Figure 1 (cartoon, one colour):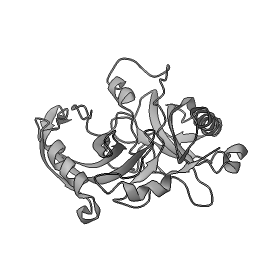
Figure 2 (spheres, helix red, strand yellow):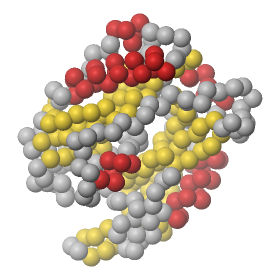
Figure 3 (spheres, helix red, strand yellow):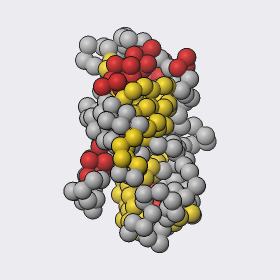
Figure 4 (cartoon, one colour):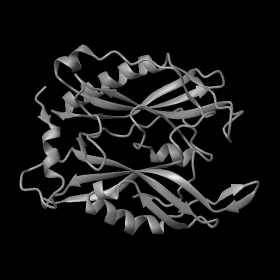
Length: 281
């Protein structure tokens, strides 16, 4: 596989213009954490970003412009709308443009604590086997899995929602390696077990849907986040359509939107946290 090592492009992203030609099939991503305050009417009354001194000015500026205009479904306690404060994870994405500059947008957002006692969590999880052909080609990547978990905590259904690669080649090469990493992830994920929730609004459901990232890295290198406030550069894969997810109901928009803000060693319960009504794009 003829590879264009994407880590070298990190030095290009902080500048507002790119003198060197950059492939159109790459992007940079940065996950920023913080807190957001929402009124009983669902309006944003304030927010803070963690470690603002470590963030690029363009990221802080975009957050200041966008977040005050967001609207949320009212948070209710015992049927009454209340003011609420929530943890948030925002994914900023930068992409090259035809004129040699780049765009920056907020491409993902999730809300709520990453993990608390009583929430759905891993009971048994082992890493997938790294495909030998991918190791030989030094291909790294991240597979975003969408799993349906039944009442016993078993994986009832599984699909690869997206596969991002840490290097690029021809379209056929990237399609082949995305398939390899996805297949390896799915074979192992179908053996995982989860502990069903024992607290909160998700207790007693017949099924739950979770997103889990699976990392493929070689000798500690690859697509690990490079540090808070730094851009991770990669070749994004297409968001795949999954035929077994509900097409109607309260979770339908969540499946359509997708989510790439999940911590490397964590999971995201689809539909958890306060609900953002404003489209991100």
